[in-house]
Structure formats: C-alpha cells, structure tokens
Length: 131
Ligand SMILES: [Zn+2]
Ligand SMILES: [Zn+2]
Image 1 (cartoon, helix red, strand yellow):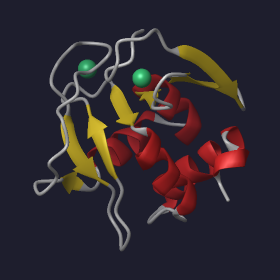
Image 2 (cartoon, helix red, strand yellow; image 1 turned 90 degrees about the vertical axis):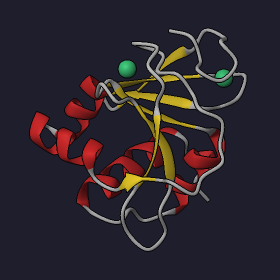
Image 3 (tube, helix red, strand yellow; image 1 turned 135 degrees about the vertical axis):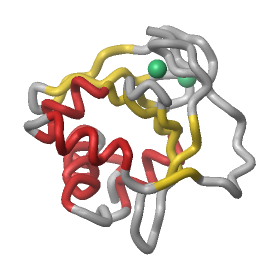
C-alpha cells in the first residue's frame, strides 16, 4: 500500500499481533479497520471508535486519499478535551495519522476507553516518541 501523502510504499510494522502500515518517509501511519478490530476485540467497538468524535470543520489541512479505496478522506477529531485530528476513510477502511497527529495521540491519555486503548497500543509500538 502506498502512503497517501508522498506515495512511497509503506512498510508493515507488527506489535502485539497487530499490524500497521508505516511510512518511513513522512512517519505517518495507517490503521486498517480490520487491525483496529483486532485491537478492540470486536467489530462493534471498532465501528463506534471510527464514528466517534466528529468532522473537524476548521482544519485547513490538505485532503488525503484513502490508501485502500482512493476516496477523499474526511478530517475528523477524537472526542474529549484535547482532540486530535486524523483522516478518516468515508468507506470505513481505517484511519490515517500524520507524524504530528501520531505524536499528539502518543502524548494524550485518550479521551475514552477506545481512544486510550489506541494510545496505549501506539505507545508500545513507538516508545521512543511517547515521552
Ligand atoms: Zn509518507
Ligand atoms: Zn477507503
């Protein structure tokens, strides 16, 4: 799969039996809906997480295309006091985090159980960026 930012091929990174696609060029990452399902343990929680938060209307960030289906992704934010913006595939394929968004997630505690779980998982995968 190619990076939605620079089109370089992404590499698969595995942690805790869950695989993500990581771009070595821009250090962004793609979390597939199927992998999120594994992380959450069920499809219901995964769907709830992917549809939590809401559209980030005030964000002037470049539109990215979904690396799976090529649809234009929406800017969404996590819920809570310290929301993190991410790109969300309208078809539900997964979500994309730019390097800065990844760092923001690593530093946030996560605003609800599902977000906290994602944050914990990513801290385990990128311990050097988590402090
Ligand atoms: Zn990239
Ligand atoms: Zn898609």
